[in-house]
Length: 334
Image (cartoon, rainbow, N blue to C red; front, side, top):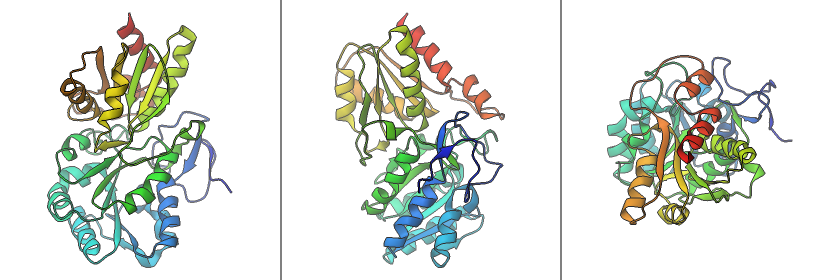
């Protein structure tokens, strides 16, 4: 039976009511896709274990905990200890998925992620919830700079999925990957979008979801959903928009990006992250090194600490909403 539902439908094993959702009203969603994917994979692979820093219910790890209680480890509010323990488990032949909020995995526990996990190249997946602007709790919980912090870490693969389809496919791919990975987690009722496109998640590969002659949007994470919505809206104004989805931030699919930017189209990057150090800068560097001169712009969060509040209000204020993206594209084309 499919777990896909609408954003307003109540289902079993969903996350806390305290968790805000960026899904549009009435949009198709799937509950806790990460937790369900990990639990299903662990049923086939006994070496998979799950760890949480006292946030299982808030990172969808509670689904894995209920299915495999003997392979779940509650580490408490000690992210450094959790990552050190995950490294030890990987050294012993296990495949750990260690979950917490992105701010704690990056700001608080970076040294342990870098030296205990990345430097020896261990097969540990660090799962970071609340990436970018996916909570209204303010700067203490908004990981707006996690990509900028982690892109500089050698050996680390970074994945920013768009929706429930991406997450379900990324989990087994990350378990199979020979080395450390960081997954930007979309949690709770996660939109289901990519099943309407001829799309298959491939680690390290970007995917063209739409073709278009006027604009190409190079997007990652939940902003691919917004890019697709903006492209559909702009059809009414006879603006033809292509969308290139980049689920893997590192290693970056530079060949796909260069190919997308070779034509005489406006190129815009879209990311749920500060414009400093994320996808926009990576794409800009890629194009400059390839000698490609094109109209180029970035849509992302400003280089500042953001306000607290309701997610729809914050996404409008900081330019991540579909309305804001459509307006920005029209301004760029004027």
